[in-house]
Amino acid sequence: MARRVEQPLAYGASTLIEHIGQHLGGNASNTSFALARLNCAVQTLSLIGHDASGEFIVSRLRSAGADTAGIHKVPAPTSMALSLVNAKAERALLYLMGASGEDFPEPFEIPSGGTHFHLAAVFRMRYLRRHAPAILRMARECGMTTSADTQWDTEGEWMTVLRPSLPHLDLLFVNEDEARLLTGHAEPSLAAAALRDAGAPRTVVKLGADGCLVDGEHVPGFVVDAVDATGAGDCFVAGFLAALSRGLNFQLAARVANAVGALSVQQTGAVEGLLDWKQTQSWAARHR
Image (cartoon, rainbow, N blue to C red; front, side, top):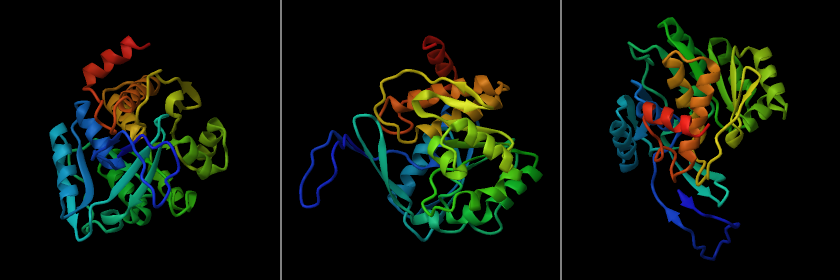
């Protein structure tokens, strides 16, 4: 993480910034940490390398109470991203594929005892680009509900990769840009409708500071002073899933998700500002 980066970087020159630090990152790690922080029982399935960065991820997840038994070590460096954040809390990411380009041990196994299976960053891991539909089908066969968060497709294949997974999903999370590139519609409501027509049963469009769009209804966000938006969408998803797990309806779940996202952006690092479930509810009540 490098903050605040306010100008184009000039090769051969030096640029002063406010902060450089190592923080937990990655869609699956951020969402898992946030779910655990919200007092949900969660197991993370992921790939890391035999290195200090991988140990850092495992340690941080365990500190929140997440089960890391599903994290496998592979002969590649742990995936890393360098997040460059400006004064508006906007970020640009430089990404090292590393372990995300490797395969999970076969046969892929769904952990027993779960009620919901969330597939983080469908486009990021090469294994998921090939096997996401089969994995989601397996999860449903185990009696779980399913969801997925797309993240950015650096290979530009978008709907070609996602479409086969849609029949096996109960809930799809996308942000505005992802929705536009998946459907060709810049208007979030039209993009959500197009995703539904393509086979997504229910879609949540993340709108950043403006909140989210759920079943065509806009749920406004919270007004906060944003410092760093890196990973806020991952934390939003955790808030939504945590609320659904407690029996809240979609509109109430969206409000919780917006609150978790708002807490995330107020600190440097995706998960540093997160609170537990009761504290998050109290925070949201004070910021109506």
